[in-house]
Length: 118
Image 1 (tube, rainbow, N blue to C red):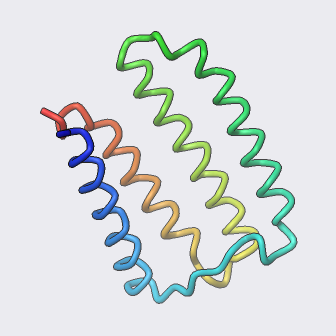
Image 2: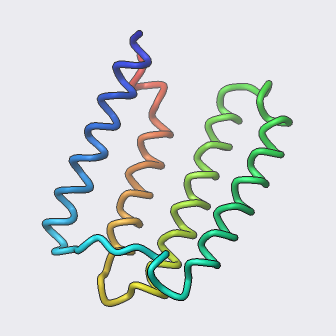
């Protein structure tokens, strides 16, 4: 129950941070799927997901620190890929800045999850 409450709290904080950053950076939400980069995005996300799902079978029984690093590396790769595509295809919108900030906050949060739960 505690895990669910903390997860919901973190999701709400994440949502609020996104909205605040949209206002601070004066961003309009645009999608990469509306640009020529939609095929690259679809293929890239699919390849990243397949690789990490295959690696998950090897890491699932690992110690918690290895699992945490596995999840952090997945977050870095996925959001880094998204930021790169936003920079390339949505550069005038500056949306990639928000993605990079959310990436850094996500990594710090995931690294400190043990402290949050205790």
